[in-house]
Length: 310
Image (cartoon, rainbow, N blue to C red):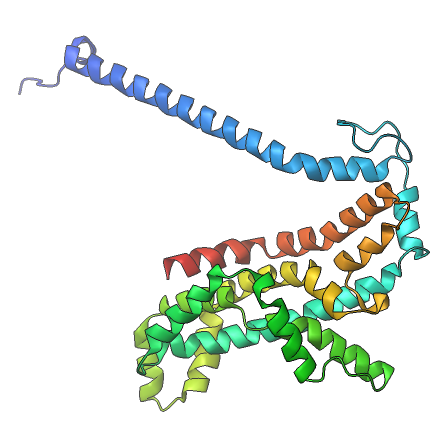
């Protein structure tokens, strides 16, 4: 039987094959150039965004010098500014840390619990006006947080959270005064509802056939499958409560009850300000946020992706 296989030289000399190979090489080159340009732009944007944080770190490490001078490396390195913050001579640093931790624990617990509970009926239970209620709540996202300051303040007074009876009870009420006005999160409601919508309806119907109540379905099916989104939302709320500033300054007249981000303002005096100590305090404030995000980065990305797909 004669060999019908074309020789390799015939394939190479084929003008169509050569043209296709050249076009492929050109496409690959254009793709590499586009990727290189995109990465260059992204790196430039990242450097622009990271420089203020780097400048804050460098300034906090310098004992003296002009803080408004752009710099790449510190002229000298000293931990004096950090020691001043840690010493508590200007602000009760460790008490501020404790306040922030308590506020974050209470805030994340209340907000996450309410969001996971409220999102379930809006996602999986059928009742008249369900979608109207959800979209009406969603519209409120256009309002800035400052728009509710007066209403929240009056509500807090009506609830008696600013009353003074005993030191321990006063401290508990003041923590609640900071946490409760933000416990109902529209963002959390939206994220959890989208996550619940991504769970197969067959699982819920099977549980109902087996006689499971709605609370059991929520606890045994919805929560485990929506864990990444819950973790992502908890990280967002932790950052929000850790950075509590305006509302905390309004509701907490006692400086010893302020969270860290609001209490560091006391480093700025009326007539003089130790700007380097303020920078050191800002760096310390950022560290817990970075730690929490790095620890929950996998759940954060997966949770937001699942919420968007849902």
